[in-house]
Amino acid sequence: MALIIEKTQINNFLEDLKRKFEVFDIRKDTLPPKQYFFPPKEEIFSYNKKTKRVSVPKPKKKALLFGLNLDDLEAMTQLDEVMRKPKTDNFYFQRKNRTLRIGLTDVSIKSAPPGGDLIFEKINSREYQVLVWTPQGKKIARQYNKFFKKTCIERSRSVKNPKIKNYPDESRPMKKLKELLLDSEFLADAISWSWKNDSKIWDELAEICLGCGICSYVCPLCYCFSTEDRAKIDGKECVRYRQWDACTLPEFSKISGGHNFHKTLKERYYNWFHHKFVRGYKEYGKSLCVACGRCQKYCPAGINIETWIVKIIKDYEKHLLTPRS
Ligand code: SF4
Ligand code: SF4
Image: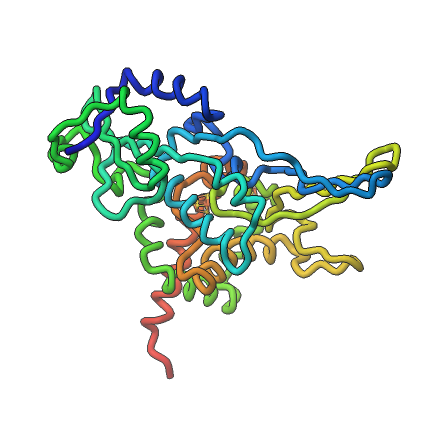
């Protein structure tokens, strides 16, 4: 037995959900869904000098993110893990635990679900199959059952329909990188070898890169931040904020006393790669990348990491095949 929602019912379903949730249709967002759990700038607490009290912002209404694609869902599941290990980021989970995630895809999910509470999977031009993955998703499916119909349709139907794509989708961005991510260990070895052997690739990249930080901001798996204390002009209150930071920015690795661990853009750019593909693999067993293509889409210098990673891999493979004397 499968649950189906008609395309024409999706808007009504979302309108009804608005009574309980703050609903965000994320499909046109430039920033990735991490912004809803880990905002670009957020107040952590404030201190009032007169009352000597520390206050933290009150949690908002429950949120619902609608329209997450499979890369978004996979990235958010991975980001949950990052935010849990080695220490739980309570600010992140306070928001995450009050948020429901609904995926939307026109490609068939054949393997393990990439995350989310519910996923609407397109089965034909008029209908979506509703895949329920979590108890929260089950609760919503039950509470809003007037929008769904039950049918004996087989899941394989979508695979048989030539108009419905299978996942991974042939037309998806960074298809090659998606494949390379299947062997994160090899990727980590190749990237770290390339840096240690002073590959010209890093000079070339540093020549092109503008050091603007956009790639980190739009990446669903970049999570570095800096903190800042701001006193109100009357000196009565001080607020601590945290805000997104980016490896490629000049001040990213600067510490008190003025020392900067990564003075050059080349070092900073490599640091971005290192964190994603080398450290990410060492700490979590996989790269901090889902090959969503956002960094390439929004990079003002037109850098496509897939192209550069393929070059690095080719150099590394050549090195592995070269006989040692
Ligand atoms: S978005 Fe492009 S130009 Fe900006 S820091 Fe990233 S790679 Fe460099
Ligand atoms: S493709 Fe770029 S933006 Fe997307 S997950 Fe990988 S590094 Fe981040």
